[in-house]
Image (cartoon, rainbow over the protein chains, first blue to last red):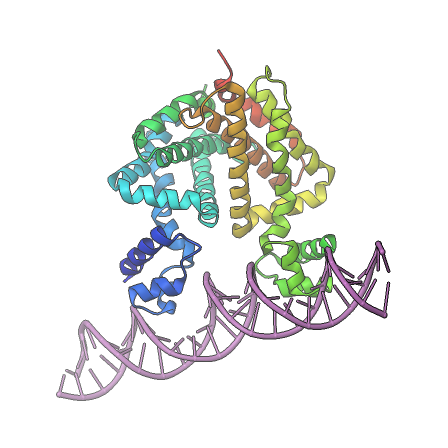
Length: 188
Length: 188
DNA sequence: GACGCTTTGGCAGAAACTGTCAATCATGAC
DNA sequence: GTCATGATTGACAGTTTCTGCCAAAGCGTC
């Protein structure tokens, strides 16, 4: 049922755009009532954001699972692989979702807010790893922010180039450019 | 009239929070009709966002006004001074606005979306300065993102510490930590 | 006072949500 | 077979944000 709503919504949103599609159209396509839609999704944005967003939940646990001695940059790059893998597993669907998200201000705003939460969790975990107090030291927050920026910019270029370059390569390229900064949190 | 609405809104929002305050309450306090409110503000969020957001318009022009030979990091730090100056000019008001924005998901989302636009403009200007193509080179976008992250994290720590540390000092500290990355776009 | 221009108000309505309650439907106990 | 139980769904009313439209009011000019 949730999947039925989800696929009906995605089909309509991809064709008509986000603002031009109403909940009534989605539930009519899925053959359910409007009330049912809002039982499964908190808002219209959630139908889209859940795809890109649910992965973030495992970011912190993924980072925590990396060896403690690993440099932060390497650990973060490995942690972000869950995103890369998820996106490259279904390139066509991912590309259309990313383009829709980046091209719709309301969706982009929600996505960025989710990203900010991941960033806070990553910063907390980085602070724990390096035994730094995130309240007084800016390095955990900065490191998390730069890593996620690298991902975001790689994603934007991936979408802009229609997936011509591999997302993993773009992310590697971005990480290489900010490698120096990501070592700021490493001991010594 | 716009100022009247704005101050009435700010007073209510600061006390009751964002979600708990309706447009009807705001317009009742200002003594105007709801229709008038939406003539001056596109949405409820806009009343808050315009304060933090209107400064962004001059970011690109500010960067463009810096000497071409100046390293990107230095130019960006100077460009961000308009924000620092605006915030420190009215610390009490700025602090409550920033806390409200960072603490309200809907407002935070809108703010981040605005920031993303500034980032795109800064990236475009950085690409122009360095004669790089932003479509193929990740450096303009990464440089802009890191600079704005430094600002954002300095701002968050400023708000979290109740303005005890000076915003300018926090921003300098953040810029020092990412200084290496900001030179990636400089020639040679 | 007549004419335009701008600002404001009121109304009607769309669209996104929320709370509540009744109907339905599957599951399992007896 | 039947009845109780719990979960899913639908229908309805209501709130809130936001928009379009038109009338009324102020205001300066001639």
